[in-house]
Image (tube, rainbow, N blue to C red; front, top):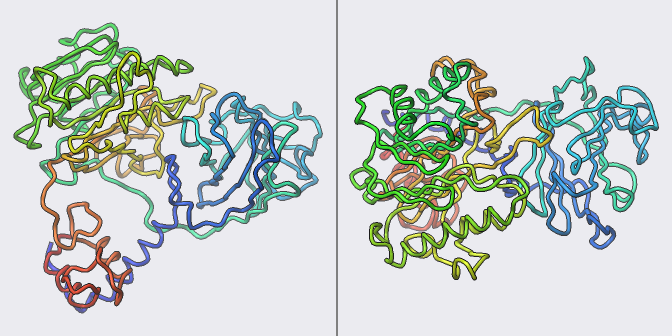
Length: 538
């Protein structure tokens, strides 16, 4: 792209400044909470006044489409089980309507631990007199799905239940209670007025690789061999062709062999029969355009060493994992510890077939519900069952922790990878992709959810809106490349010098800044803009 003409600089700067502000002002439901840090909580509550659950703080935010809540408690809990927390929302800001509880008239009462609730279109004092609702009625989901002291939640503001509009006023009242014990606020209710202004620059990320040479690693739990189901096969074919993977890690293929899997998916992707290498263990199957140098079974999981040296400058050791489900925390942790033990042997140079400095990806349906320790172990190498698997390991090449890539949906600021509208459990991030960021540079990190994609994108990739419903899990895209030399002017590290970088430069204008100074004089001035324009890629 040509360098922008200097006379257009002010207009470009104004546009970028607006875009950066809008993006920074938007909440992402991903189990990380930095985007809440500049928001004052709507209410805080001193610690120590709750027995089962001690409520500490609640923050509220919104977009024209959604209501967001951040709930903080004193001790770790699993929001979806084993608690009596209930959310009450007076959606019309009228205490004379709805369920008469806690001094408000609640149209919505949702019990997190029971994963169900009621909608009260009429005035009542009987909790059982409402219309039973589930997460899908409100497009409700939260993060994280593992134990935590903080949870961010989202609900759709355009929800309709039995023909009744749920949020029909610009102001709502909110109370959160724990059974008959604690409540927040201690008295009264949180009052929140929706900001009705639209947010410019909504998320809309292409499926295309950021750079042509990026290696695309894909993981997908395909729900009990459903790619061979005639009713679902077309969905899988369209999705796989749109995603265009270089490596595919599949889970829940129980009834079909490695060869059958290679022929089906390889046929969808075209080319010659010998273009794909394949390996498998139990329900985990891996297909790769790159030779598989070694494969090994770890419990029900699969480890493969891929010859990616020509494209990544190193081999890639991939763990295709499908750890035990649901409330089997011990089984999940045991298998994760086994994977860490294996990786520790590699890093120590004790594996005869795998180089100690290989890049690593741990990917798949890890069933990450229950205890947060399991995710921590995957990233940091912390082994819990040391009597079985030995001491903790340093998982990356340089002795550091690995990177949890936390991919987001292409067109929504959410991270869930599992969704079943007929389950009582709300959507959550059960699947992960964790990589060696000491030797790999991330490209696009995406979750493909066609049900939230715009028609323009669907048409571009020849997809249909219901294609991602082929499985209850969604495909994860992890694009990686070899770490290269930094590009002068690429302030956000995306490999481009464009408007996003210019916005960052302007945020430090006429200030001392080591991060954004391009000339080495310690300050951000017009000289730095000149350097940036000279390196402009667009």
